Image 1 (cartoon, one colour):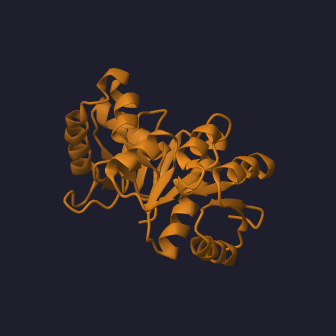
Image 2: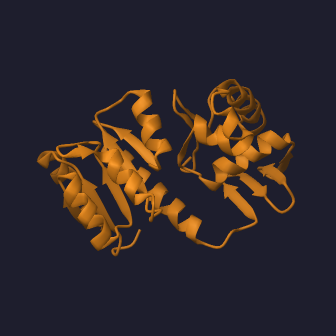
Image 3: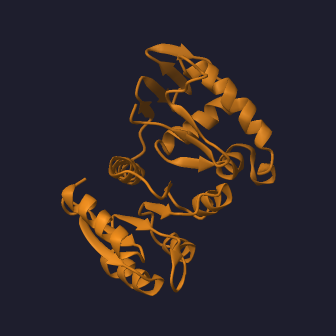
Length: 231
């Protein structure tokens, strides 16, 4: 994060805007605010923020409208902050292009950690492709199709390897069941979540020291999976 990073806060509740403004400014972010969908649409094009914190329940429309619009021209991280805690709402936001989803209430440290991860991921996406992906002790050599964990080679099936690479390329970001199934098995497999459960369980057995208490491969119940980076 640099002092030049601008965060757009789209939130209709003034107390929440004050809380977010204070937390973000304390970390050196420049903060701009919108309390309506119409204002947010204007600010996002004028200021082109580095990241967006987006409430879904706005007085003049659904925040997903802004998300879908932004995704047509920008890859800036969008973190949804919402009181809606149903799995369907989370999946809808993530499938529409959100980078993360936090349910209110949430802590300042968790929010800032999610923003840091989202910004790192956005910058990595803009950087030249690297042949080796590194997540803690896990190294994925994409040129050789080799995976090591603490220097020891991990033998993965082709499907397990594709899953791990996909999660590593989006490390820190939750990927929905639909996103994973589409990218690994194809668009006709979006409802075959049992494929995913079986292969993720196998991948955990090979990657995690204790598969019952995963350190890296995190499940977002009812939503998808995330490869954790801050562990």
